[in-house]
Amino acid sequence: MRCLIVEDDFISRKILRELLAPHFDIEIAVDGQEGVTAFKLAHDAKAPYDLICMDIMMPRMNGSEALRAIREMERELGVPPNLEVKVIMTTALDDPKTVFDAYYNVGATAYIVKPIGKAKLMRELRTLGLVE
Image (cartoon, rainbow, N blue to C red; front, top):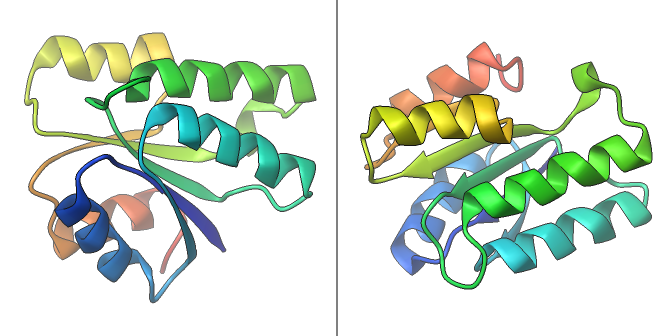
């Protein structure tokens, strides 16, 4: 399976890569704009991602803007809702408005508040049916 990590913080990228590497082939983007480009290139190559882990707060294009663009591309490509890429939004903000926006206005599949630990991440991946 394929995973895209979209994260501007080096340490957060490193932690996510270490936690996800046993389960996924991983690619990295350092901001939302790179994430959107990577998503498009993966679809163009007929090798879409199974999972995107994306930070909300990033420079140039934040995670919410990037996810809106990704969901719009999926609609344009005719991807049915049940086959959309699973997206776990990550953030240091434990704010109900941010959670609401990520789920209902942007289309996130899941939401994890940092710091991200192995147990928390694996629980979400099991819930999403991506690991056993």
